Image (cartoon, rainbow, N blue to C red):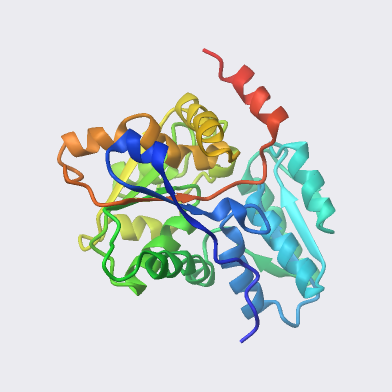
Length: 322
């Protein structure tokens, strides 16, 4: 078996976050992956399986999937073309180029960039790397839950898992991982920002929904339609998936609080999950009876993010000042 491209990331206990929710909070620090986010798990696994003899890979991504694909391709010695929408920060484009990738800017949102990536795969014979909708990706992402189970040991089980949802790849991977370790009774709290809420819209409608536009600043949550598998899981009565929304302001506030308390800077897409702790949402779910009052340890997937730096943080604060 070839070596993995991803790291076994730290599982840290956060004293300050534990204080916010009144139960132990564990942080799975996926921000410390070589590409800056959890995406390298699934994309590494997919590329090792599909792109060994490839003439090149092409990936459509507003950031993190592209960073992972560019990193993995560089390590495999394969050319990478990353197609990003015009909404991607210049910082991301620069980082992709630093990894040796060719960057194409196409369209306004991820869906536009994805259409171009599919076209390039077809016309130039490149291996298409989907950012979130593929069983090999979910299988790769599931490895993070295996690591958590190994770290916590057999006697500790999370009371709930907090996860951000964009296209649904991380959610599918987490559920796959929970199945692998026999934790399917653990509730998953699926967090999105208002304006990038394709999963919540699907759960409410009882069918897949395509958003008209992405109006949230959490651009990395910006898929207009969630993957079908994530929706299927939401309809499965054996699983408990709680879909919740926060505002952009709450997500940004969470990013700042996390930076101050944990000394780690993550992007707003990741802030959506953190906001569940900081905004009191966990307490509300307990009050409503959706989560038990005596909650076991909370597992927060700190999914990370490469499209943030201090300048970007200042820009977001200006944009979202109310």
